[in-house]
Length: 107
Image 1: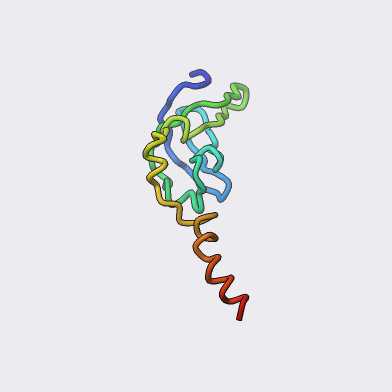
Image 2 (image 1 turned 30 degrees about the horizontal axis):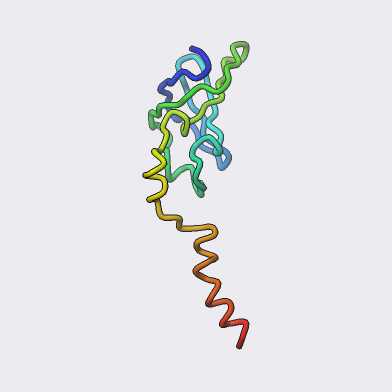
């Protein structure tokens, strides 16, 4: 096992900041920032405890048998597909609400 290897791990726990996984004798963490380049409202919408996922190894701590892992690096989204994904929050939502807010402010 070395950095940048793609391995399969099992999700063992979930927290708002990331998910914990078991990979043989190692335990690992996939931080929420390594789940997706897009906004992730809830990790539980993407993976569940018991799921087996492919991940890329970012760091290895041989002494404590811990791994830092990346889901997005092992499962990249093609840029064309990413452009087609509808943004449901963020600037677009504010942009759509702006005319309503302007009219409300005028009254």
